[in-house]
Length: 144
Image (cartoon, rainbow, N blue to C red; front, side, top):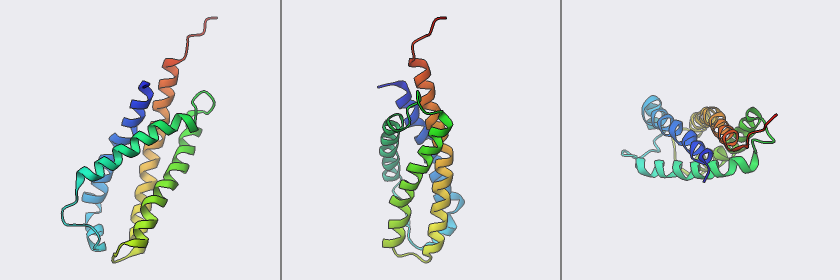
């Protein structure tokens, strides 16, 4: 596998885990607690496993959907953030709000929508840059 794949995997995983941990379990812990939907002891390894799976899929999908040779990294980052950010939001926020008991569906949707927007605002450019750097290093030198 190319180095860009592994850099992209890390570009997703390294910011997402601490962001998720601090967002959900520290910074807004009292608000999530008031929603009455989290267990007393969250199972962090399951959350981390989910992030690893996401990182693998995103690192694999990015260059297939936004090839660095044809798409400027900024446009790739924006496209990636829009496509996968909206997908992540639709996979996590909407079904959880629809299925689980909570004190305020509206507050949950607001908190998780903000989290998802921030997460993809951070990881999308990092993944795009990881693949851009990988493409530059693997491109053959051009002599003039």
